[in-house]
Length: 193
Image (tube, rainbow, N blue to C red; front, side, top):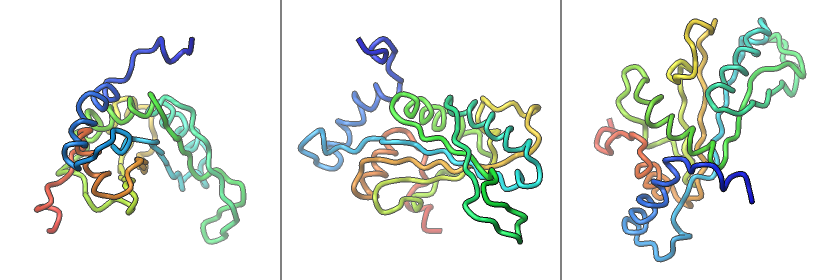
């Protein structure tokens, strides 16, 4: 018996199966359940350019990323030296995590329910950040919007990019999926301004 069978399913995965799939089938007139788009992976990326001067910032970024995602991040290193930025080849300049399955749904749930509402002066997410294939990218300016980050223990505030990969073939399907999953997008009328 697999270890996943013993675990409780994430709340958002249960919601996806019970509510989102029927709603998307009706909304887009899909005949087969397998045509309904789903979340495939979430990639969280944090660039730490200041780590060139202070290596301790990289360790801090890795610790913060691990606390936020619940998974140990991979450290990204410079591919070539750039003298203007005092950057040497192989130097640590960022970290990233790829989340799948249960961790992905749990992270997405915390992102939508807790982190995004804590963003200062939040007026909704842009509908224009899709890539043409149903995948969505958003930037978070401060990592302190996540409850897992202790403000007192971090020395510098840095942002991160969150890329949500879906199986949707079009941006319209991807938008529909994320809306049904609870992402707070701006209304289309506000987007044109």
